[in-house]
Each structure stands twice: as C-alpha cells, then as structure tokens.
View 1 (cartoon, rainbow, N blue to C red):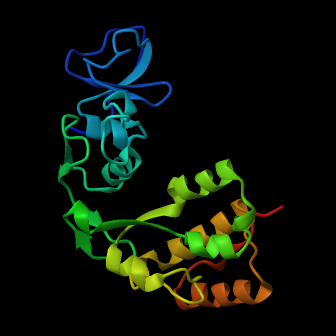
View 2 (cartoon, rainbow, N blue to C red; view 1 turned 45 degrees about the horizontal axis):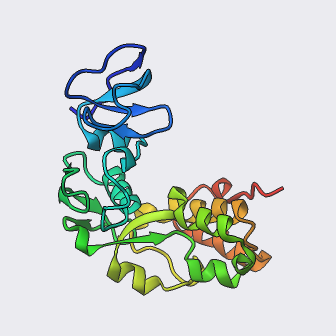
Length: 219
C-alpha cells in the first residue's frame, strides 16, 4: 500500500490521497495548494510520500512543530515500511523499526535513535571544515549521504575518529562505510594523507570490499 501510484498531469487527485508536488512537498487534501497542484504524484499515505523524497513542510506548520521535522523525515525514510506517522502529532512516529547501521541491531523506539554523520563533524572541523562558510557547513550537516541511523551508544563509542581509528561492528556495513567516507571526503575537499588512503585500502581488503570503491573522484 506504500507504492507510488502515478504521475498526474492536469488531473484531479483522489479525494483521500497525499500528493507530492514538483518541489517535493507532500500535501494532504486539506493542505494549502493541494487543489491548485497541476503536476504531482499520488500516494496512499504521507509516509509513502516521504519515503519517495517528499518533505513534511506541506503537511505540518514547521514554525509550530516543537521538533526537527528533518529528523522525522529521515526516520520515516530509513525505517521499516510499516511506520505510522500522524500529522496531528508531527513529532512522534507511533510505530516503526530501524536498523542501527553501526551495530546491525534493530531499534523500535525513536528515543533510542541517534542520527550520526558518516564523517563526524568534529573530524571535519579539525581537517579543513573550520574554514567553511555557513551554507557549506549546513550542506555537510544535512547531507543525507552523510547521515546514518544508529543507537546513541554506538555513536558515542566512535567519537570523532576516522576509519583508521574506528570501524562499525556491523561488518555488513563496512564496505559502504568506507565508500561513503571516501566519496564525502572528496566532495567536501577534506584531505586524506597517503598514509590514511593506504590504511583505508587495507581495511577494505580485510573487509572483503572492492578496492575500486575507494578510488578518489577528486579533481
């Protein structure tokens, strides 16, 4: 029931459907702009809309919501498909399951969840990020590629180390972790020494990863 239905051009949405506009706003039938939308995609639920990249701001007044809607969006996108969310209680997800990517364990309470960065903010600040301006810093902090669901205990164990200092206990995530670190360090121009690169290649080999995943794309 969470399947994307179709893209509509100039047709009316089903009376009870949630739509996603071309600017990725999820709108319910009682949302401002719902009736005026011309090009949109229809979903059976708000959760389905968010899982396809939609934003909650069209369903909830962000100024009156006493929580970070961006966090709620990430939890809905990364949680199990049976997640339940109600716009009348926008800061709560009534049901769902999330995998701690660092440990591999499953979490069932959002209170136990910490949204960690693949490249910790402290590491970035100590390796070139201290020169970033506001927009670039915000981009790094909110980049969905750099955000991972984990338990608070897993995040605190890592602190601000690099893959050389700490690797996830969840070996199934090792290759993706190393690849994301390499890509993000390239994209945000964070330096990696030759020693660091060699150490990461050794970690990739030890974890059974394709070493080509760690080839730099920096120009």
